[in-house]
Length: 331
Image (cartoon, rainbow, N blue to C red; front, side, top):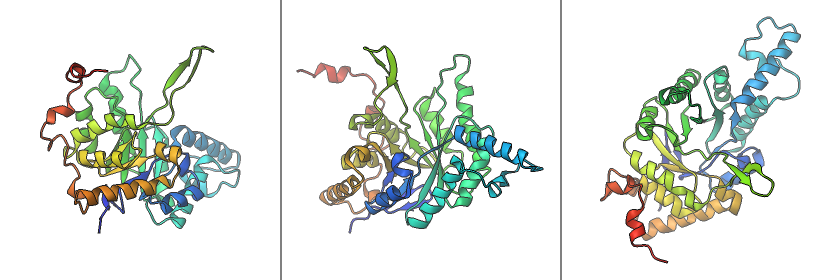
């Protein structure tokens, strides 16, 4: 009997396949289908920091005009009878998902700083979420800020959110850091449950006919797996939390590679947009078939087998030049 169970921080999952935050996780019907097709957990579509602040301003204005004495109280959600704001709908989605699903429901907040919005994770916990994922990104594009100033924002956000909740906290980050390995190790020491590597961001493109700035490719491709694979392998057994791989994982091969590198689980989105939600079943079936072929009974039998700390040639994960391969390459 193949055992696909894994630890996602302090959460026990039936397999390593997680439906990542996207438009596929913003409604009950889709969430039910994801569970039906084998998702071990779902990360709800991200609520943006700006949405929380906007709704807070609307609510405070409403309370002020309605004669509330203490407009700063968070409990205003219990009194508001007007049109549903984004935040209220989000809390309702959590409650409905918990009522319909048996797998863990993970909320997600996309944030830039630690100001004003950090009370809201407490509301997410009260709504019943099993965990919270913070999707943090601060593009280091300000030439007047030092690396330390940019990176300190991450620690401020984590510290403020940790004050509000007791449920597991996961952090999804980018690879923009001055000393990435040291930075991620330090983040892992903040008592979080897991690091998710890496964010996939909006990237600009240029239309040569219209001279307009447009959007680059939105969905990932299998070729996007390598950046994450490198850093999962480098950090495996060197951080104080679970490692979760994201971006470029489109099939069982991608899942297997990330687990061999040291990941506890993977997040999948683009592959589901391209192939449909039932693609999850194929990935799981192919994963089980490979494990049987290799005589592995559980994920722990091969997890981290090819991490940098265990690889026969650890330097291969640090190599960044192509010279070795160009010398032997011919068309």
